[in-house]
Image: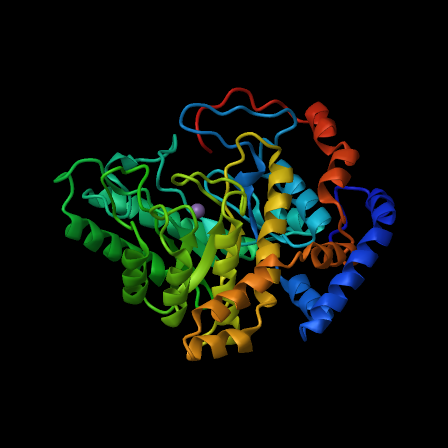
Length: 431
Ligand SMILES: [Mn+2]
């Protein structure tokens, strides 16, 4: 842990002391229940303790929609304040040790100093994210025709150079991956030659790939629609995996849970990508209608569980290796982002813990003899189990808070920051 942790560890301990007797009672009871099912609770706890998920720097601020953004008092206004808030999240939940930065939003003049600053807060940096979906004041050509797939060569060149700049920044920050999402696409049938646009994307992306260090991954993030409303160049996992195949072994696919058509079987996409060694990472969030960027597990926790069921299968059967980059990617429009990210990390780790409880032998046996009901029950029994004592115990042992939200609110962090930080003022639209 870092030397400059934001919250008082005494205060966290005091809060935990009140809750520890009840937690011990519930943990012991769950332990006996799992023991009757042949599961060692301490092994599950150890796996959950190993689990981590990155948080996005931009998630520390209030999001918004294309209609409006309503900031909160004490919201972070720059990468330094965002890191502070991310450190609060990690200190309380113990499972978000990395921050994923975004450029140029998080630009600073001294990245070595920024890395030290993060380290002192107990944090490291995760994948760097490039931005070629909006124009910046100092750039020479506009992304209004797209970026990596633009028909304008100077635009493609600029987008390639920006991504290479992001790799260079990432090297200084200790990152090992570049996440590339492009908003490229079209709004009218006929506006764009669908094949040539993809060709241009592949050609430009190959230049970025060539600049990637050997131990890095290039994570390709697909998205069905928005900002393009007729066609997107990298619209689905098919376009993504074909591009990753063509680029080479360092290119992998990133699944953002909100970037699919409604009711798509995302867990099956996960399984397919892993089958071909192309599952590179996740952006966790939840949705009701489209790319809603709601809190993970808030709408469909069962889907999150089924996805983790596939991820645990992948862990057990790593094929060409299995090391996906997990990250939260949400827009917190009506909540304190710190509270949303702690609650989401908990929902994600809960889905993972439940997936670990699946009786794999029983599941595989039922699958082999085509016993659909018993195969389903193997999943259902795990899903029904309340694993919260395991998560609470993991947090307690890591120096985090058993009850994250009440400990956070008691700390008065946001009120204190409201007095210290300058106001972000009225903002328009999503960040
Ligand atoms: Mn995303």
